[in-house]
Each structure stands twice: as structure tokens, then as C-alpha cells.
Image 1 (cartoon, rainbow over the protein chains, first blue to last red):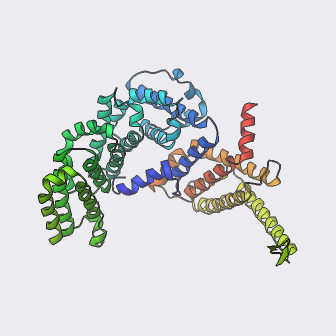
Image 2: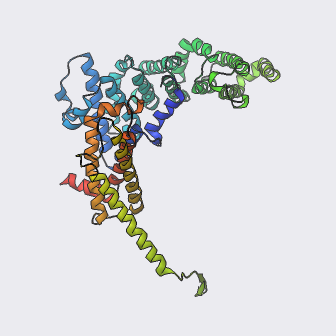
Image 3: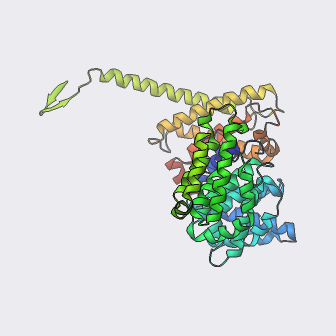
Length: 306
Length: 159
């Protein structure tokens, strides 16, 4: 997880969605998914069970709770096994199950309870320092934040979620997997037009960090995030700054390729390709092109003649 | 090739041989299936299908072979999937293996949970456990999603 973020991200994607790798976790994910589809009501039972479990675990960390209030946890067999695990492991597995059964969570009879439990517990989940849990929260926010928080009513909490994602995005040096997952979730949300205000607010706080990290960042999905900022966040200052930093990054990659691309040909350098995609997106912004085309052309020609 | 009522029809001269050949293949497929099931259930006379003897080489040999038996049975069931009914002789055999498999999976999850948790992290030598558990889960998946099994289970729940 910490060393090869892209691989880790692919593994999690496989466990929750693709089910192709030959591993125990993938097979377990596939079992849950297929059985929920085939047996009517099983998916709802699993979601309800894990919602109760999550609520119980988090509530018991902050104070005394009565196990008898959670009727599904009274079923001895599953709870007996699960209770042997650490609370972080349980929370991680719980969040993973919700991400496997995305379709079931979005059913009408499940969503209200799901929303209620997460509105109550998400702020506490943000405080957990376990990277695997953080990574699953990012995955969950990418899939369900718009179901948990209504954009109109809970703008503040929504923004808190987006800030959490950006916070994780900058963890690349400590934990690549977390950064990849956060970038992916941001990518899934940022293009929704009605959220652009929230993203504008968050970017106003952290854009300088984003611009700074363009020079060094090795997270390939981070460049997709930049692309979407250019395309969907209508802010000329951000776009120009990104354009400038991206150009410098291309020059840097040509001179000294990043670690991962050392053995590869210049043409196959992922970062250069991604950077050019961002620049291409800048040209689609008519306001910028009309105002700054001379500056822009100078930058591009500089790269061409390098 | 013949023309019947103005349309061309290919007439097989060796229909009998082809039937005979198919019957033989079918017979041996079933015999191998029974053999694989027997190997799975009886090999080391343990209470569970998996061999879990403190991580030794014996585990590796037995578990690798049993994974292959599971995979073989998986393909046979997939082959007969659409034609199988509850009353087929073969159905009784794979349901028997299924129940033993479920018991084994429960044993792994309950008693060997700490070990299996670490399988992905290569902290312990594997000795065929990962492969065995994956094959077992594939097997459970295909059997429990057969139409007549789903009907049978839902009837059991109703009664």
C-alpha cells in the first residue's frame, strides 16, 4: 500500500468491482456480491448487519452502549467471529462491504438508515489514524458522499468530506495507496457541476499546495484531478498556475525522468502524457485562450524547441 | 449431403459413433467427478477438508491436490449447469461436498482467522492455503447459485 499506490488501488478496485484476481479477499467480495444478487433480501440483511456493527463499534469507542439495542448483533455466529478482530479491522471491512454492495445501498429501503448512520459517524471516522481505514473512507466518499449529505442542506459537512479527500491526496510521500484512492474519489466528484462551489471553497484553501506538488507528484491520477480542475472549475487563476507548473514539470521530465519512468522511452513517459492532456484541456477554455494565447503559445513553443 | 424438399441438409453417416463417443466421455467425466469428490472428502481422514497441520510440507501437498479437485469439480458443474436437477446422482455428491466445504470455511474463519488474515501479507509460508480457500469459495459460489439449489434453500427457509 505504501510503496506502490497504483497496484494497491487496482487491488481494491478488483475486490470491490472487477473480481478477477486470484486472492481470498477478491473471492470473498465476489461471494458477497453474487449471493446478494441471487438471493432476494440477502444484500439488505448484510447492509443492515454491517450498519449496526459500525454504529456499535464507533459508539462503544466514545461511551457506553448497550449491545441489546442492536438486534442483528444478537445473532451469535457472525458477531462471535467478528468480535475477535481489532476495531480498525472491523471498520475497514465494514466500509469495504458497503463499497462492494453499492447498488444495494442505493435501494430506497436502505438509504435512509445508511444516511443516518453515516451522518452521525463520519466525523468520528475522519479522526481514526489507521491508513487502511482512511483509504476505505476515501472510497466510500467517492461512491456515496452525495447520498450521505444533501448538497443543499449539508454544505458544511459535504465540504468537510471534500477537505478530508484533499488532505489524503497530499499523503503521497507517506502512503501512496491512500493518495491514489483520494485522487480517484476527487476525480469522481469534481466534474459534477453543482459541487463546483464547494470545490472552489476547498481549493481556495489548498490550491497553493496543489500547485507546489505538481513538480514532484508521482501520483498519475493526481494529473487527472488537475485536468478536471481545468475543465470543470471555472477559475482563470488556478488554470494559469496549473499551466505554468505543468510546463515546468514537462521540462523536468524531459531532463530527468521520474523514478518510475527511468527505464522507459521518453514517448512512454506517463507523466508527460498526462501533463499534455492537461495542457490540451486548457486550450478548450475559450476565455483563457482569447486572453492569454500569446503567453500560452510561447510556453508551448518553448517545450517544442527544447 | 442430401436435398430434402429443395433444401440442403447435411446427413451424418457416423451418428452412432458420435453418440457412443459422447456417452463414453460423459461416463468418464462423471467417474472423474466422483473420484475428485472422494479424494476431497477422504484423503487424510480429518474432520475438515483443508489440511492445517502447523504449516508443514504435508499441508502443501494435500491442499494443492485438493484445490485441483475443487477446480476440476467446478468445471464439471459448470458444464452440466443448465441440465442438472435435484434428483441427479451427481447432485447429491456435490451437495455433500458443499456441506463439508461450508463446515471447513467456518472452521477457517473461526479458528484460523488470524492466520488467514495474514496470508496476503506473506508473513507466513502459504502451504497451499490461499489456493485452497480460493478454490473452495469458487466452488461454493457456483453450487449455491444453481437454480434448483436456490429454490431448495428458499423452500427450506420458508418451512
